[in-house]
Amino acid sequence: MSVKRFQPYIVLLPVLFFSLQSMAQIGGNSVYKFLNLTSSSRAAAMGGSFLAVYDGDITQALFNPSLINPQMDNNLSMSFVDYFTDINYGQASYGKTFNKTGTYVGTMQYLNYGKFTYADETGQTSGTFAANEFAANLGWGRALDSLFTLGANLKFIYSGLEDYQSYGLAVDVAGTYYNPKNLFTASLIFRNIGTQIKPYRTGNTENLPFEINLGISQRLKYLPFRYSVLLTNLQKWDLTYFDVNDPDNKIDPITGEVEDKGGFTDFAQKAMRHVVIGGEFVPSKAFSIRFGYNYQRRQELGNYNKMGMVGFSWGFGLKVSKFQIDYSRATYHLNGSPNYITIRTNLSDFSKR
Image (cartoon, rainbow, N blue to C red; front, side, top):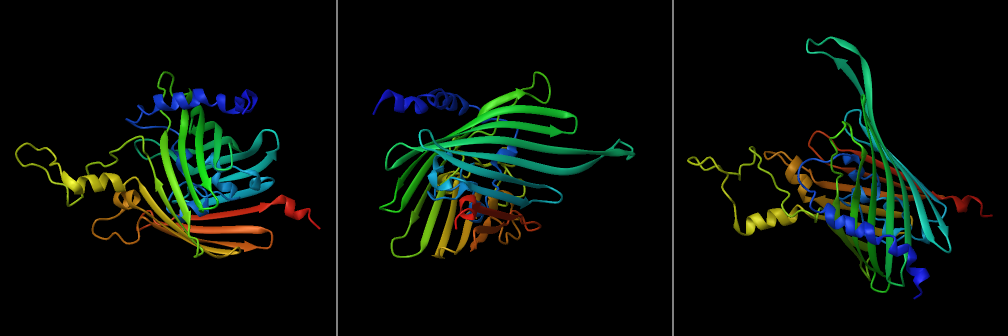
């Protein structure tokens, strides 16, 4: 393989080095959290924010750029999420393939927090204000050989919360192993490597929501079914926290310290918070049924007295004429379940006679 062919990948080496430095930045809070909100109905139905499924679904490019491939050429998708109260968000994506350099996907993300009322300490109101966040993404993907693909996203981020404004720049880097013979796919993703260019307050630069994710999927040979296993937030092992409402948490009456659960139970709790399980039943090219389970979501947002379906999600995909319509619903809390709607199409189909 010539040096010229390696040039696009050599450019990504500094990004990979920077990602190793970012791994230490896991403490405290981070900004631009909306970057980790999935708009893909398919991914949401299967419990997570990303997938390791190599096909022509352009909505997967935003969270896993190594899935960008020529099947996405001239594809257009639009997603809308009816979140909580007046909050809504979504994305629009378009893909184009160039023979010499690979396939590119441009995506616009937005998050609308709704309108808020100005009020002082006495309750006197004086108008309203808005809060919105946006990100313009340019994704690129290319096959290294018959089994491995590489991809990256470049993100320009804007956040406006009342009179506070911030700008940021980030990249994602991902690699995928896809074996069509064994119907197996695995992806490793480094997300949100970057920095604030302009913080909300001068001199108060905050971290971006950096993540390392790993996903696999396996399509069964003799059944129209695919299962997915996602491992999230691999940059940090312990995602647990002390919850005073958790009946399993105990405090030493003498020292006042939290008693360590220890043993296998503690290990299993920490391990399972990284795991998201999903499935996709595809009886035909025109219809599919999906479901998922997110353990961390159930543990952090469920009510200990009545867990209900918190952490579970479901959805379906339907091919209607030239359009693919996906719908899903994910249960975050007993009092609310966001609705996800995605419509995608290949614009080339409209020019065919």
